[in-house]
Every structure is written in structure tokens, then in C-alpha cells.
Length: 324
Image (cartoon, rainbow, N blue to C red; front, side, top):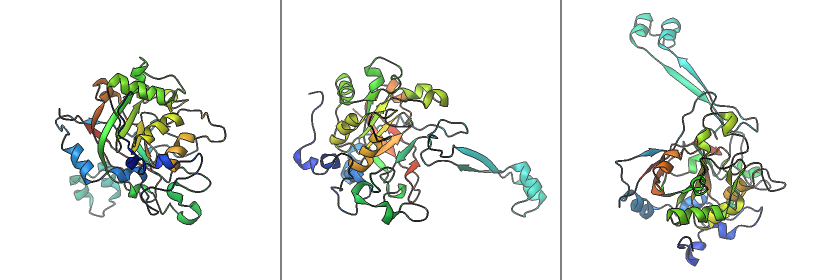
């Protein structure tokens, strides 16, 4: 075998992927009220185990900058990232928005700004209410019952806990000896097993698994970064989910390879991951630095913004090497 199996029969009962049925939402093994799926495998003991091994003398930031004109998922007509200043030192001298007078504004140089963006912009998490089947999401929550005037009432980004866990990098581009995988390359079980064997890595229940395609070599040019990206295929996602992954991330904006290879479903891997397997997705992770360091196992720390009801939210993940 390429990797030892840590998934025994007792653990299988906690992994939603083992109860998955094609194009059906899965009931959570963690109960009828569960809204976070496989993130339930994080507990006090697992957090303590990885934090106690983290070498904080080196920290790698896996997030990308947000800036006007950045690559992003705009195919469905969602708004691009926008940024503007709402207050400037010179402007305040003229407008006096705080009604404090010219002399005070000349003394106090006040700057402020605002942003507008799709919640799936930059390095971010997809929560379990992002995709489902037939009007339902993971654990059977129905859109007709759980969406109000503004947002989902369940499984939103505010429910997503801080993720403190063991992390594993699977460098598929390096496995194939290329800087960037070819357009539309679907990453399947053979790719993932090949990485595990080449790297001497293993997968364990409770892992955050990060899959490198090399697509960040094309960042930040939208014309090169966005079209027909490589990414996970369903079989590859099933392989990782059945090994007990709690979050899976890639360095692309789509997570899965595009265009879709499944007739009738334009985002089959998202639907599988979120609705069938109960595993959150991380997209647009910057993996070049840890790949260059051949840092294949690490302590992962990441928390998204608690946007109530949102289907995704920005995250700034960082990783640290493990002490020997």
C-alpha cells in the first residue's frame, strides 16, 4: 500500500463519505442538528496534539492579496473585488465628516476605506450550504425552510470553527515533473497515491489536505489563471474524503477541474464534497512556498470571517512545520 490506513470500522461510522449516495444529500453521522460535517473531528485532544508539535519559529502564509483586478470567480455574474477610500486626510479637511473643524482635521490625518466582493473571493472557505441537490444541502436542510430574505439560517460561515489540525500537502504538479498541471487535468486517486508514495506521506482522519496543481504560477493574471483550470475530480475527492479529510484545499479558484466531465452537473465535485461528504472546501491557497520547502506535513491554522449565513468567507490560513 502507498500509505497505512488509519480508518478502522469505528472511524468509518464517523466519516460521512461512507454513507454517501450519488446525487443525494447525506445525513450527518454527528446528528440531525449538525451544520459543520467532518469538522466535528476537531476536538480538544486533536488541537492539543498538533499545537504541541508546531514549530512557531517558521510560519508560512497560504493566503493571497486582495486587490482591484485580481482573478476571481466571475462566471456566474458575481461582483469582482472592489476597494475604495471613504476618508482621506485631505478630504477630511474639506468635508469635515466628523464636524470637528478645520484645525482638528489638519492635525488628525484620518484615512478609511471599504470593500465590496463576492464571498468566494481570494483565499476562502466554501461552507456546506454552498452546493446541494434538489433544494437540499448536507444533513437534509431544505432551502425552502432555511433561507430567509437575506441568507441561509443554517450551515453558514459563522458556524465554521477555527481549524487547528494536522495538514498534509500533496504536490501533484511535482509528481508529474511540471511547474503547472495541464489545463483541465482531473486529479484522481492515482495522482494522490503517487504523491503519498513519492513524498513518504500518510493520510489520517482529521487532516486538512492541500493539493497543489501549480496554478499559482499563473497568478495574478486572470487571463491565464482562470480558464480551464486543473483540479480535483470526483474519484480523487472520494479518495481523500474516505480517508477522513475534514477540509480539502487547492491553489485554484474552482477547486475542481473544468470544464465538468459529468453530464448534467457543472460542479460535480463541489456537490459531492459539500452535500454528500460533508467536507468543506478551501480555494485559492498559495502553496508555492511550502512546496518549494517540501513541507509535506505541518500544523495548519485557519479561521474564516464569521459572515452569518454566508456560503463562503475569506480565510487567512497559516502553517508551521512540525518539531522532529
